[in-house]
View (tube, rainbow, N blue to C red):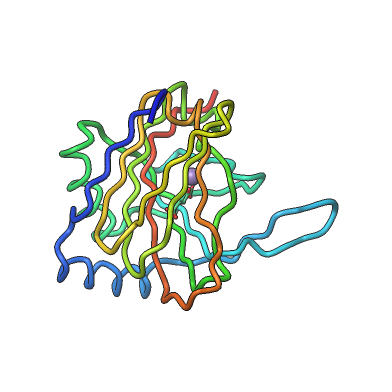
Length: 190
Ligand SMILES: O=C(O)CCC(=O)C(=O)O
Ligand SMILES: [Mn+2]
């Protein structure tokens, strides 16, 4: 992928620990149903979300203002493991729960100003496989996709968010729930 720094670790977490992480996160995370306003209509986001992180960070995502919940031991365990590879400390994580194929996330880049110039996004997946698609913002024929399987880790860095958008398309296939964690570094707001 030109203008991007994307690394995919297909089997980052083992099968058994991934099963356990999925189970614990599904139960323990305070999943919320957030809404977005489209042309004056309040619409449920097509997934459940949650926001955990260091104290004293707040964040706006697609017009939703979130205050982070405090880290849980499970989240810290996952964070430690990916920090070894990413060579940096994340201070927050946005979690997504895709209940079935009706859930997804539409084209966007993780380019909120709180993430700074070249955001590093560490994305961990547990549960059923979903397709993750990239498209270049300017060169319309440039595309890429990857199957985000149980226990995988996708690291996005450098100029990826400037030049590329990504999505998890909805699917008519029967899919089981999937949990995604996107670890981020949020800069202090001033
Ligand atoms: O579920 C995923 O893999 C992607 C989620 C995502 O792009 C986001 O939360 O910004
Ligand atoms: Mn994203």
